[in-house]
Length: 339
Image 1 (tube, rainbow, N blue to C red):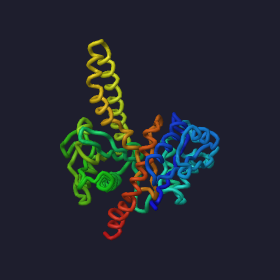
Image 2: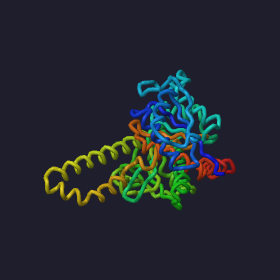
Image 3: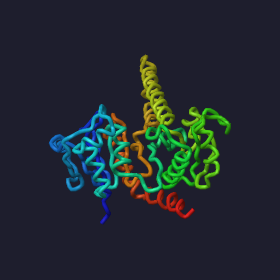
Image 4: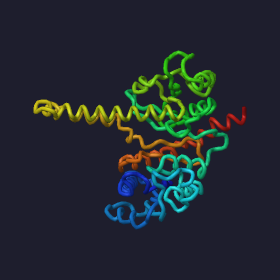
């Protein structure tokens, strides 16, 4: 019998909670027979949503949590004070080994604090970065960090690059993934103090395939498989790309439906346009995992729909199947001890 991958889903906190969270879980267990989902939140509301669907009842379990961490709550105080919230209860379940991963669309700061404080970093990991897969013209690139560590040190970025490389080698089967650092130019002497100090460290690191600087405009072209930066720059880069993509799609839709002739033409190219939209849909890849924790914590968008929820649950299953945490420990931390 196939061993079940048990995942905790925070039903609350997102813009579309709990409805889209529950539907995502239902669709996930329907599609993967080795997936078991604990849905954490107010049991009456979750049960009411589950009652709308047919699904394998033995692979979804509701865990009651009467409280909720909202987007207005201060992260540290919320994790400390709201012990009956869906987020805190769910993170404790991962810490206690009841599940291998936790998925949440809730308060980003609280997810980051809770992941590092409650689930905990692996011994030897300095910082845990958020690392989403971002669509590019070549496929996807891993952006490390996009929101967890705004005041990172050079040694943190080197470790981000190492963990990101291990992730891409095992999750996407990319042999010797290329690694670049976000910079304002291609020349080695360019950049701020952090980039200038980190560049030679990445260059000297034998664990990675470092190719140098990546300018923001080249990210969309897939300039590197793993793109390293601190969280402030990474978050601005990611959200700029998301905003431009969304704005362009709106403009294209408006242009191709502005006249009867353009509308007729739009019908002819509709399948191709759908394929392009799907190519650049980040929700196809799940959420942003916090790398380097003792268990997996995945942050999805606050406005996540059932599709992103489902793919994030699949992402946890893949993470476990490929033993990403085990490989980070074996290839990075155990090697570090021997050295």
